[in-house]
Every structure is written in C-alpha cells, then in structure tokens.
Length: 209
Ligand code: PRP
Ligand code: URA
Image 1 (cartoon, rainbow, N blue to C red):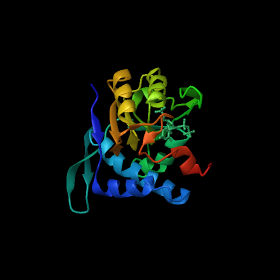
Image 2 (cartoon, rainbow, N blue to C red; image 1 turned 90 degrees about the horizontal axis):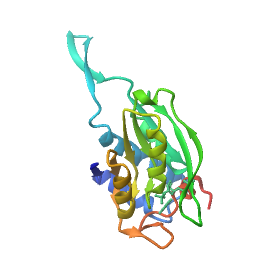
Image 3 (spheres, rainbow, N blue to C red; image 1 turned 30 degrees about the vertical axis):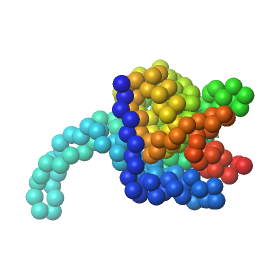
C-alpha cells in the first residue's frame, strides 16, 4: 500500500489558512498555491537517488553528491494543477513538464479528458502529478492511469487538500503511488466539494468566478 504524507509544517499550515479564506484575492491565492507547492516538493523529493561526483572547491578536491539519472517530470492536471508548477520548478528547474487536461463533468462528477502531452522520455523519469484538490479522486486516478501507459520509473501524487474519500479511492486504484498533501479535510459535500476545503481551486487561481 502507498504511503500518505500530510506535510503539516507550521509554514504550510499558516499559508493554507490564508488560502482557505474566501476573502483571499486571486493574486494572493496564486502565490500561496505556488509557495505551498515549493514546500511540499521539498518533502516529496526527499528520497530521490543521488550519486557521488568529484569536484574541486577553492580549497581542495572533494566528493559531493548530485541527483542521479534523468530526474523528474512534473505533470499538472489542468487547470488547477498549473498553479503548482512554478513552485516546484523553483526547486527542480531542469525537470520536464507534461500536461493532462481533465475536468469534472458537472452532472456526473466524473473526469473528462481533453488534453494529454507528456515528455517523450517519461519512461526514464520519476513523475510527480500535481493537483491541489483530491476530492473523489477520479481526476487523479484517471491522470495516473494515462501516465502509467507510458511506463515511467515511478509516480507520486502531490496535492494540497485531500478528502478522506479521494485518498481511499486513489490508494485503492493505484496502491503503488505515494501521496503528499498539506491537509486531510473532513469530508465531501453533496456536490463532491471538499469540506471545509477552499472552494473551486481552478476558479480561485484564474479568477473565473
Ligand atoms: C478540480 C480539481 C481536480 C478535481 C478534483 O478540477 O482541480 O482536478 O476537480 O476532483 P475529483 O477528485 O473529484 O476528480 P475541475 O474538474 O474543477 O477542473 P478545473 O481545474 O479546470 O477547474
Ligand atoms: N475541485 C475543487 O476545486 N474543489 C473541491 O472542493 C473539489 C473539487
């Protein structure tokens, strides 16, 4: 079974409380999503393999460590996952970025795919899927299934707020995918929105409502 890490560092909790506030502007919301993604990424990349390299400092030669292999690909789920991309790239600037477009059909609440463009060498990369909201889990499950068709080295999911229902569904569908979130909330409401949550993440990032 996958591991679930709730990265409830005090700095993340503080930023998350502002993010949840309905009076927070789109401009601040965007910055906070990006900052939280940076902080979570630090934790989600803790087990990346490193290799020894010999370098020469101004003082002497020494053995140091750098990241091994082809490194990472980040795959945001459109739209809201886009808000996390700058934050994670600030830590891993050489990572590749793929995109998967999914939206929840307002009637069925099931994800509908409309775009998929992934790095050609994804089979040589560790992938971190980005989406701030894990509600029913349908979008994350479908996105990860699409990525698995290209045989990446590994896949992790990084969200900001998860509902218990979405977490359980994602773990059941993809037991090999470790999950990182900043908060585990109480439940879903009758419209499958996370309670207390933060509302519609895409609309709040892009100011579309
Ligand atoms: C939101 C969110 C997730 C999805 C989560 O996207 O960004 O992708 O809902 O819900 P689920 O876990 O029940 O699938 P939405 O479908 O609203 O699209 P948007 O990002 O384009 O606004
Ligand atoms: N998508 C969102 O943006 N928010 C929720 O609470 C659930 C799904």
